[in-house]
Amino acid sequence: MRTKEEILKHVDEVMKEYIDPNVAQHGGKVNVLDFDMETGALHLQMSGSCSGCAGSTQTLSYGVEQTLTHFIEEVKTITSEDDAMYSDPYYVSDPSMMHDFPDPDPGLDMDSGDADGS
Image (cartoon, rainbow, N blue to C red; front, side, top):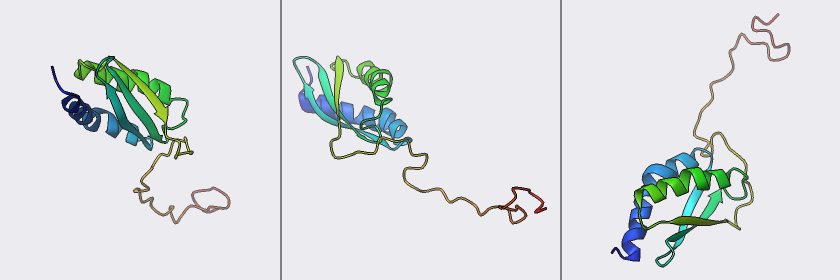
């Protein structure tokens, strides 16, 4: 039987490989708060744009819970809470603001919308 620390280390590894990259694409973050050895319940915090988002329930059930219970036999169920310090549960297409958008085509007339400027 593994210790709580060993289980949480394995949870962290699975989170980093499978879960974090997916929720980060939408500006979200899932934080591990605690694991109950008796019940197998892993308690998480939905943060970033996941906090308060209506879709986070689906993410939690179909993404996080299925992944963690698949890879970690000790995890039987997932519970979660929203991050009380985060209040902007909206999808951001580029949460890190890393994309540089090119300047508009110089032949595009921004006033009329015609590509040839007429």
